[in-house]
Image (cartoon, rainbow over all chains, first blue to last red; front, side):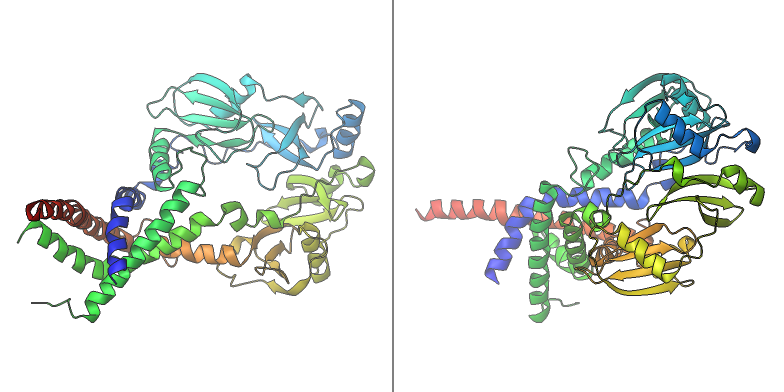
Length: 243
Length: 240
């Protein structure tokens, strides 16, 4: 029992600060306004779909044949009918990741004309603006390779469109598929700071599996168990008396 | 009462009420940080199937789809067990048809579900323990929007299960023992045993009490480690 008490005292010194950070950030998660911290203040949820003219659509088998002709000899895993800015496209997948945010390779082909669409800066700006309900303009745009600070789990190269609004909204567009990765803003970044603290994710890899948190988790586990034994001893010895 | 004695009293009493939750936080937290989250999500169970489509496989055109299903949306051409297939939605219905013949491939039979599950599993020689059809009352780990599904339980370490959609033949989700435990751990960590939502009043009450209890604990650390050691030294000096 003496050892347990000694451990509890010295461990308290080691884990005190981190424990307060965990409790404080935990309190923040409990109280935070989830509608704000998602970063979706200016997100247009479901962009309207325009009617597709079925007669004009090219056949997928022709697209596959054409790709061979054009010597874009990349294998095609799937071909998906999508819509970008009111135009139908075929989204071709050349490397399939388990999830959208895992590494994927795509190309886009206009479903009426068969032309290849590259998501360049201008296209990315237009797609980003079509998902943005605010009134501000894009102040800067840049192509970013992972890791991406606002979306650490995203493994694809993206276009980052920064809007000049009071929340510093950034919109991310997948550079190979035109997929909307997501919106981020200062409210989300503020919450992300607390997640970084709670997960001890100081390299901001978007993960809570790092050696420093495992180390502190084990110390804290010991600390709490010694505290539990101490409390049990006090109970058994009848030291909890209500006067 | 001195600050030292006051702190001891309040730390002792508060921890009687919130101490067990500290143990739960530290056990569940340690579990969640020690197990790699990608392992937990069962990503390593899924095979990396890069199946390339060939134009010879496609003998059924999308204009033929539109004649039968004029409202077809989100048509996708991909592979299922090496064959080219179309998937699309019409209204609330989901369709899976052969891209060779246009024949409907649904509902997915139990045999097909097993084949698909084995194909998607990382080990081709995997053994199946049991298979069941879930049409209502999904288990906790399965979202109701995926119904109906085949659940395929593999006879492997950590009892992995794949859920295969009856309407699309897709792998909709996967689980194994360590993920199931992780879900429990998270529930207990955020003290929401139903919806796993961290913004609940019970958690708020416990966090606030815990913060107060911890601050008294820090006062105790100061007195017990700092002051007492200091006093000891002084005492030793006096004796000397």
